[in-house]
Image 1 (spheres, rainbow, N blue to C red):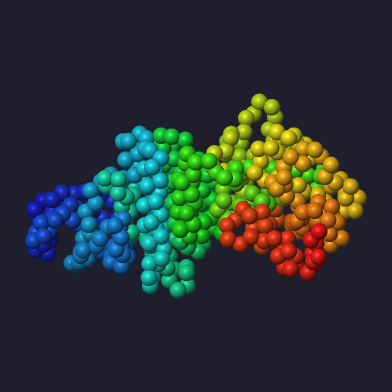
Image 2: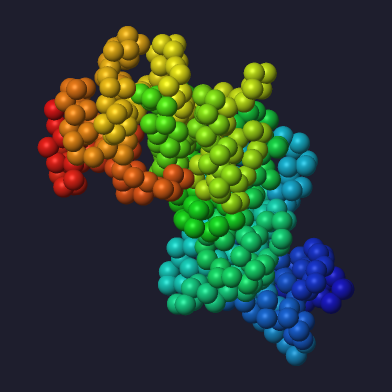
Length: 454
């Protein structure tokens, strides 16, 4: 087999050896009648490599995508399987990046878009979607800026049971569930895509939005349920970030202030950030008071991640209050939710697009909620009222006193998780396009809070 010019099946002439691996040998061959080069993979029939050859042949014969090699022939003799596929002439993603030393923002997003397009195709292939399982830089070939995904020997069809997979892969770029012998789903591939995006980031020659860090953190969350659930969701997040480059967002800052200490500013601010990120609107929490509530809340949680002073947990990302001298980075292209508590200035609020005024529902806190503050009178329609943990009478009282709609914020113990009530709150603030809830609509949805209009 090592001799050049050897003819296989009367059709293929071996021109060169492209590579050796544990599974077999890859040759550069030329189809005699078509006069076109092909890649021929030779697998010995004995042992596991033969199973990989059959698996890859079954996978590739079902796909047709410009980012995936085309399979032309699959043959065998007494000793070997022969898989003949499109010859991909290029270099691995790792080689390409090392050779270039840096890439532009546009090329970075272009590679991300191509990669997402390939996996969106695989995950939605009919009648049998495919999960790849073994994504790493060596399996991504760059051919004149066109990405090609190679080596489908570990890939599997998604069976009716949703759990018929090869539990194989590579440690650095594969989801944790592959090595834990847990169910493998398309979300496992999303983890690997996130790792590839993170791998490319150091080579980008210009600062990227901090949204990218949030995207990679969410895509590579150890818990599958907290990742993007489809490649389309991941792709949409990347596209939004790309479109935001060089643009000023219409909504950049939400200030959360309270009528008294302990009224729930931090609780609502953290919940709002978690819900906005859950919906795909990249938001970051910034603690602007000295209560240290964020750190206290995070101490109760597992699997907290920290990067450059920013804390990540599920869909939440935020900065605690730091001492003087420690500068918190200014977010770019991200909606900032600033938790001022009861300590704020006109300068703090005048630059906010929305100011949430949080008041409590207890009888002894009603007087605290009276709007006599001259600062708040400058805010006009940007000032929105939230009655936290209020009963029916307190909600009616606040709505009448403020002469404005009041959102009755319900009891909530899981501040880092989105739920239906929090989605309603975001819609009520008109931060989510589509449904927009007025107070009247909210009252109709909840018998407990009827007749709250002033």
